[in-house]
Length: 282
Image (cartoon, rainbow, N blue to C red; front, side, top):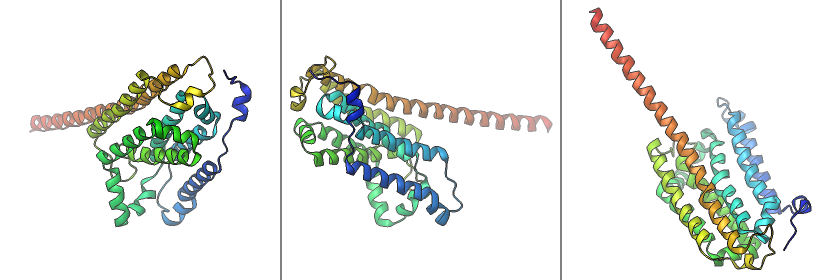
């Protein structure tokens, strides 16, 4: 048994240089792009404060997931804690980054033929869907998962692919560019419905299978969780909260669709009333 108390939460922060440098570079480049670079090359473009907040919030959530004691908790004690971290890197952070990215920032890059061809291929819904889910399932194979806990470089690679493929996965929903546009609302709903299925299947498997990951079998036990209970909890975290995010976005899309249908109906009714009034006057 291990004692996880206040001292753990105060001292077990992971100040890995690659995380610190990567975060500073990304945030610094983003702020430079929406600030001085925008004023110089896109003076007519306005920066939406909500977009800046969204981008910085996404970066902060992912940064916190990687440097806070949650990282040590997931690496050394609990599989379920690791699943919380993975959801932050794939389901929470990437869509916030896309929402926070203005179209005028990525359009100049996408106008380059080579970059556009690569980006169009990678963000094609079927391709983005496959790459993200294949990557997510692959890293949860016991041999690779155990390797990430034993080798820091492999672990970093895992996290990088989670974020990159997470951005690709959410692109058909939150694309910031008209050059590679979002799916129609109906297409987005279908895409999100299908996106939840692979994580449901993986989460269900982890919930009902016996413990698969050797490092957690030998890990000190905390909070009364056995290896089996810990894996079941991790599977449920992937299964339920992970899909709540998809359901939340689908709900917003459905409301927007209903509002659009209502606006069209009112417009048609107003047009019909105008025709009828014109006939009466004649």
